[in-house]
Length: 340
Image (cartoon, rainbow, N blue to C red; front, side, top):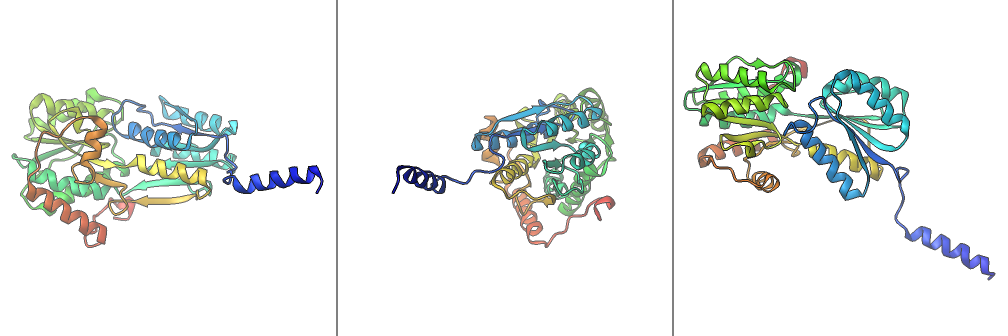
């Protein structure tokens, strides 16, 4: 055999022994956050955690931007896509949908993921969460923990996405059957106004609420602060926000980190698919931070300990409901826009 034959044979053997290389080799992850930006200790922050985990595990670069206004989304999406440097571009928030619908058509070979809204394009994975199911579990806990039997909720915007949380929450309060009620909901009108969030929460406390649930992004931080000042319980959302104060007794966990992480991994291992992916309690995309399988994770992540003990009988009711939801024995209602 001639010398060059050996060289060719060696190259072929080396190629066969090497792990397969994806077309995305050398490409990065692009992350376009929602307008609240990092530091909301909620939706954007937990999204970033998922992208960062995927980046570190895969050894892939991560670039992110923090738009200040909805009008900036399209420009960032186009800039990322036109660069050709990203295997997947992850867009955080329902209000990126209109821009992404246009950009996804302009760049049909680019993979995108959109959190909390659908875009009907073959190169877009729409990641949706059954927030109503987590709201149901949290509502059970709230119903047992309130002494005044009056619970207040502060939303960021009056939209189907947020009403989905609240419909499930109210149903959970009713299912617990403790006599507690949820007062009429109030909305800040934006995700980034903690001052207004605090004012609205104070008005609910003045009406007799001794427990406040904030589902409002950065605006919700003001509502949590109001509860602290007045010495009443509060609940958080998206990530475990209980480390912000001992008065915060639970949070619905919308595991955007898991959804973003799994979708990025799929983009790089060749299993990415466009279309709608909606998950809930059964799949681990939705929960509450006081569940036994979640509480140690959050306490380790944020280096704190929950100070308010949840009575055993309350946790048993929550676990019962969780199991029944997972098995389909409880169907948690949704707003009309979701077919509820």
